[in-house]
Length: 141
Image (cartoon, rainbow, N blue to C red; front, top):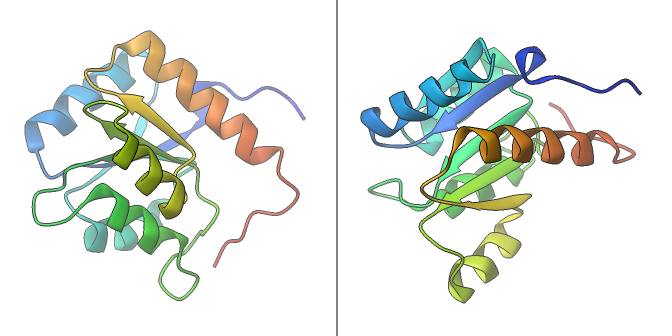
């Protein structure tokens, strides 16, 4: 397997805040990512994921009306998701024990504390993508 670079990846952002999505998109663009897809909630994200086939998703913990953990659980459901093995990074305000427990139960690949900087974000995306790619099978619908 050859090493992947950030510009080769499709990234899905799931956050209910347009301004936060804009900040994350700016950080990703600064890292060379050109294929960034945005969603405001889990329902929209599932539709977008069917169209863009993301390699990694960044999911905010607080999606307003729902939790990012609920969104991730929906992506892990084979009856709903186009890719149950999609690597998912939870953007959380801190790594509190209840968040960590919920993230593990929902199937989160990693928690990235907010606020996030570009270098940490880029490194974590590549780490999680490479880890997921090393798994024997990745379920896709």
